[in-house]
Image (cartoon, rainbow, N blue to C red; front, side):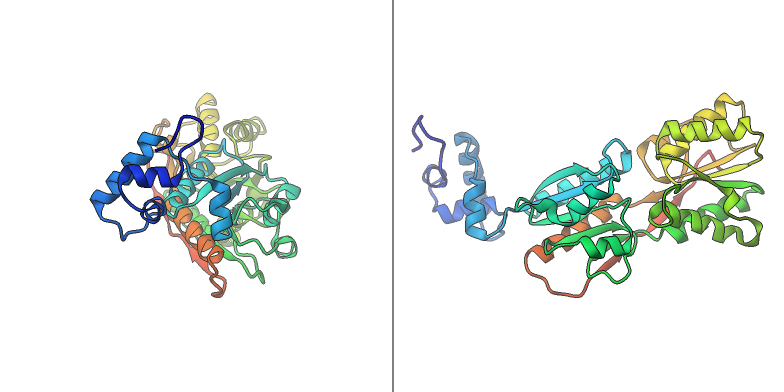
Length: 335
């Protein structure tokens, strides 16, 4: 048995449970070839002794750390917070720990993530880039297994998990048009670069309008925040710019827009329709409730984890591109 002067070992757990140390290892690594009653005995012994496996020993034995790094622009945005939660859950099921970092959309920090942070801590990286375009991604990547979330990067030998943002934007815009909108605006167009999620959504918006609209219908915002959405609507209203629908690049922008519209005494959806993007829970509790492009965050996370773990474990298959479906969630903010 373990004495009081040292932490318990895997052999102490095996002795207490009456099994071999190999059986304890199988239980801790999630192997299925363990009888339920044996698994229960081992788990109870682990709990009783307070056993914690040695990360260094595990890394030496298997040649990897069993750590995945997730790099997202920010965690204050509900979508990325949900994504981090789902990645953590999916990675845990596969026996991996998740390290989560914010890039702030900073190009140098995104490049560091592409290189695996120049450390040997993470076996693989899942990155949602904001600033880097295709050539930048392909030029900065290292030998660390990497999965990109977001848009296609032409010519890269990387796995991708994406939404069809262009098609979803067309559908959202077509919806407000069919409900009577004649002067829609797109809120949240990229002001810094013509690539990435925001730009593709803006392009889909213009595509749905055809020859009825151009770039003058794109309203840029410096960030995707509630405050930025409210400020944009305040400026539009103050300048007397006519609009009867807002297709917003994110739900948090749309929530801010709803607040400003209410303050300006503009009725939603009778005078202005509003549709957001991401399908966050908050949209179901606004007044009126927010129509949105709903995204399957769990499917994104699970596909990303599956892809990066496959690469970590030696897969040499061709780069995969997984397109996760979206759906329009129609509520009170659009007719």
